[in-house]
Structures are given as C-alpha cells and as structure tokens.
Length: 175
Image (cartoon, rainbow, N blue to C red; front, side, top):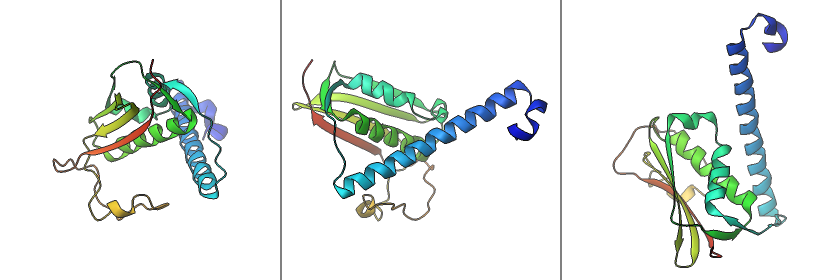
C-alpha cells in the first residue's frame, strides 16, 4: 500500500501503517527469539549470562517492549523495595514480556494487570497477575509441552473462579 499509493495517503494513515509494521516486526522478532531460546535450551546450547539487576528496572524495560495494545489495560507495577537480583536479564525480560503479552491476549480489555516484585525468604520474586479466565483444569497438565495451545475456548470471558498469574523467583543480592 505504501509502495504503490503512499503519495495519496494522509500523514495520519501513513503513521498508523508505520506503527502497525513496527508492532508486527517486534512481534515476529519476539517469536523468533523465543523459538531460538527454546531450541538452544533443549539442545543444551543456551549460555546464560548472569548479572546483578534491579528488579524495578527490569520490569520497566519489559514494559517498554509490550505492544501498544497495553494502553487498553491498566498495568500496575509494585516493588517492595530496591531488590537486586542475580539473573540472565535477557531471558528474564523475555519471560516477563511473554507473561504480560499473554495477560493482554487472554484478559478482557480494560482489565488490570499487576506486576509485583518482592523479596520472599531471600529470593527475589516477580509475579504477574491478571483477572482473566485462567487455564481450564484439563489443559493444565499440558501447558509446558512445546507448542501446546489447547482447544479453543473463549478466554476473554471474565470468570470469578479463575485467577491467572505467573511467578519468577531467583537469588536476591540485597541492595
């Protein structure tokens, strides 16, 4: 569309197309990075690079990589204190981005997504919570199978019986 008739498009339309192209390319990059990490992990070729990181900065960086769809959600971050943790920041960012993207994907628009960082018994912990419908019991045994997506069901219907969350836990270094 831009190549063939770009001169006929107004600036707002062009900007929207550029934004869509950028968002789609970011999404594809994340998919490729996830697949490469899974392959390297399964092959034993994943080399971890541990450094000490402040959790609030890691969370803020992960939110900079979330698609613009997050504007339709209230994302709340809570950090108990300055928490320094020893981690492979690249992989933790990837996991956080995936958890928040899933919360956005499977939670009704306007929902609240909460990201909490805390020190729990000497371990740094990040928890991502939302009020989506959760994972049906029959799917839970399969969620860690590679490429398992489960049967189709309406995941955007709110339900009081489900509460979805993901938790990361790793060494706390103090701050």
